[in-house]
View 1: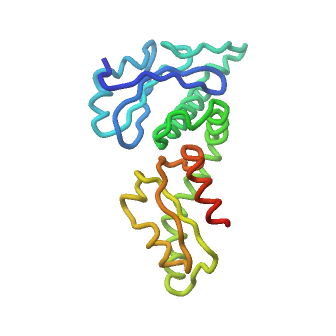
View 2: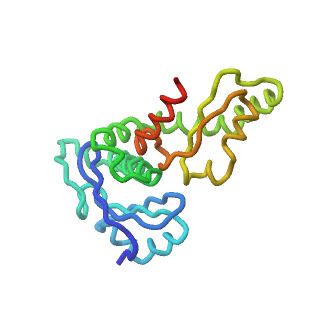
View 3: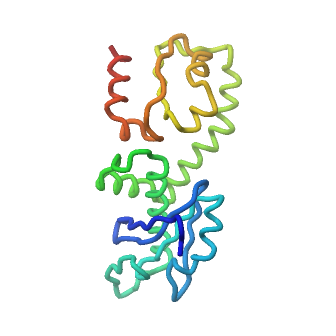
Length: 209
């Protein structure tokens, strides 16, 4: 079952969530019903994995996930709490999927990222920044294009394998806006300072003089 998938155990704020991950592409989180586990998806997940990165988990209390203690009002097992925990799972997956260095994120750092990026307000704010980039920021850039330039020196670094490297000539893009541009690709995924701290530091020290 789940050929080509890897098993995972993700430490969340209150317990550990077990599951499997496979495929490539935009993430899809598969949740099971009752009384089942993530195994309910064993015939569907591999087919979805042909187009998506599929994450199938055991909810808290099910399968091989943790069973945190309950309370008199049953809050730890409410659907809202279960859902919040699955947000942590997706944040954890995004950290791994954008990184090329498996140990770039120590457990304490990973937990802090998950904690800070899992609240609904934060998720909304992050999405708002993407929306602004595609609309208002674009309008501002079009207004400034050819009329305003960046006068200070600019250092541009990017992942050697990411979309920026494959879609653009980054230095040429920045030189259309700035008078002095240096930089280059870094052997890392999305998180340059964490995956390639030595190379990133070397670039910064040379740039800062």
